[in-house]
View 1 (cartoon, rainbow, N blue to C red):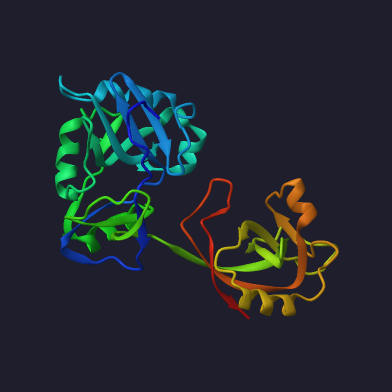
View 2: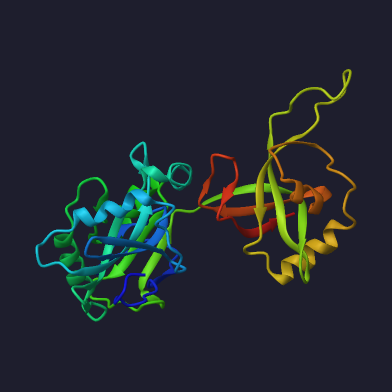
Length: 309
């Protein structure tokens, strides 16, 4: 934190199921990276995560953003935005984690400027001021907003396989640390039917998460002229959406855990995961919603939607 500047927590958005059109709203892409409040005072920059953690050591190259600020009378500012990295023209979170030196800052709001808080200034005016603050030179970008046409932007996000869009009321105020219906996140979610091949207990619960897999190509014959064995590709663990009612139903259906995995699996589990997993047979199907499949072949942000018997 820079001396003399306020301690701010970012405003949060509520989830909304579908895109919409409305002349009183602005729509922008949902950037896939690290939410970051950018503090700049004089020649110093401080990067702060959504949870208040400093990010300067992780992304030291972004400290030179101070050189992108315009104006001779500038003293200090706090911007809200996202740290991202672009791969093949689109933001890629996995690429960012592996290549922090490729990070750029995408600014979408201005909260404080020259010792003046801007929380009670309407969003459109805060964004106008933000557009005048930075020289956009490849290190810092302005998140462009589109008026009224949210459905079109969402279709664009789907076409480019982006995370989704944000909808914000044009004249909304900024409520630090609050989740507001003035800001809505509309995710580009995918669904897939997968097999549950095991589960993990957690404190106070017999089933804390499910180990899911998809059926892949058979690796070959088991022996002689016998049938090809089933081959599965591990896709990771799912805990979100696993409520107590579903847990109770699955506990009864699973029965006693199998002593070992019953089929061939592709994909690695850590030593701790191997010790803790409870393999099951027969398998059950589940429909899982997620944002993307990581380069390691794991589901990102998976949510259990339903059990398929």
